[in-house]
Structures are given as structure tokens and as C-alpha cells.
Length: 303
Ligand code: CP
Ligand code: NVA
Image 1 (tube, rainbow, N blue to C red):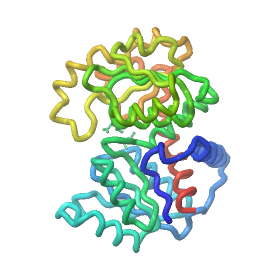
Image 2 (cartoon, protein in one colour; image 1 turned 90 degrees about the horizontal axis):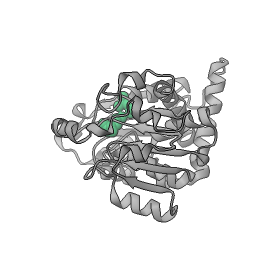
Image 3 (spheres, protein in one colour; image 1 turned 180 degrees about the vertical axis):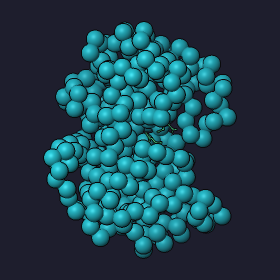
């Protein structure tokens, strides 16, 4: 049976750590000119129903970098745009390619594709999760600060897809996670409750960003309006004002705290230009690590 990557919760800590270890090894090797052909003769299909710069390009570069090939399909170019059922699409695509990387809206869409696909389906972002991103983020934290289990991580802002996947990561890796979100914009309650039950006392939800960031080793934020929420952008701008990651907030964290942002960033909204461009911010290393993590994911699932 094909092994899909739909959410982090489907994997053990050891399995998640294995992606990161392989990515670190591939990164080190690529810096010394060592190239692999692990996926020579293999093809992946990318089906993207939302825009993407980093995820699309890093998956494509990862696949080519391992000797494989890519077919990119934006949803409007497929029969999905004319309501062909997903279960038909999945079964057809699986006869042409060795894996599917999918960015879409509902998590149920990737779940359904996976249910019908005989080749691995990789979740490249849904409204509920962004699992591959969190793996490259954790890889970046480990590079800067060592084992993540010993660290205090804070999420500031919207309880969105990124926040949900960070909660699942905390459940698996065992680090302390505080989420500071405005009332009414908290993460998915079912995911939060399930993971809190698995790691009692490790995950806390607060509504005050200053309280959330206290003693944090890692400060993490994301846009206030995610893809698909464009019509809420103005109202969210007002609600989230106090949740900006700025110099004052960063000063309230641990002295050597690092700042994460998965990008794209909206400067002077969720993060100031000053913080994004500061030495404490590792956003561009996170972006690079997407390439290495995606190589590790593709090699593990298709290799
Ligand atoms: N971080 C991230 O997923 O970026 P893209 O939307 O550009 O892929
Ligand atoms: N939460 C953001 C992440 C973008 C990479 C979104 O879904 O738009």
C-alpha cells in the first residue's frame, strides 16, 4: 500500500526525525558537491489548487535534483475545474506518475485522493495542515539550537494550518508549545484536544502575545489571512494588531531566541521588516531547508 504524508500525526517521532536526519545529510552532501540519482526514472505530479512559490519550486527542484521528473498541474488546467470527481482523478493520475504532491483547500480532499491513489500522496498544504513546512522548520530549529525537545516554542497569531501542524509536531517531538492567538482565532479544537491529551502539560493556549512569548527559545508566526481568506483580510488586520512580531515582542522572549516565518511575509503586519531582516530571524534558512526536506520526503516515499 502506498505510504501517504497527509498530517504529521500519522507518523511516530522516530519517523519524523528520520526525514530530518536524511535532509540534514542530503544538505551536507549537496554542499560538498555530492549528487544522488535516487529517483531516476520516477515522475511526480504536482496538483496545486492554490498559489505557491517555495513549495512548488522546492518540490520540483528536489525531484530533478534526485534524477526524477515533474509534471505540474494547476487545478484550473485539469478536469477538476469541471467537477471531475477526485476519486477518478486519483485513480487515473496514479497510472501515470509515481507520486502526487497536492496543495488544496479541505483536508478531506487530500484524504480522499489518498484513499483512491495507489501511489503516495504528499500534502503540500491544506486549510488544516502544512506538514512538510513544519518538518523544514524543525530542521532549521535543530540546526540553530540542537534537539527541539528541550526548547520552548511560541506560536504568535492565527490558529491556522501552520499552527495545527505545529501542535502535532509538539505532540510527537515533546517540546513545549505556547500558542498566543486572538479570541475566536484559536487552532482547530479537535486537534488541540487530541494532542494535549497525548502530551499533558506541554501545549498551552493563551490570548496575550506578551505572556505567550515569555522565555521562548523559538518565536513563530505566519500571515493573518491565509490563502482562501482574502475577504477577511481587512477585519483580521484589526483583530490581530497586538499580535505583531516586533522588536518589543522579541525582547520579551529568551535573549537568544530565533524567529521563524514560513513566508510569504507581510511586512509591518504579522512581522516588522526590522525583525524579519534581523540576525535572529531564520526565515530564509527555513525556505532553503524546504528543498532538503522535500528531497528526504520524496526519497523516503518513492525511493
Ligand atoms: N511557505 C510556503 O509554503 O510558501 P509557498 O506558499 O510559496 O509555497
Ligand atoms: N497559512 C498560510 C501559509 C502559507 C504558506 C496559508 O495557508 O496561506
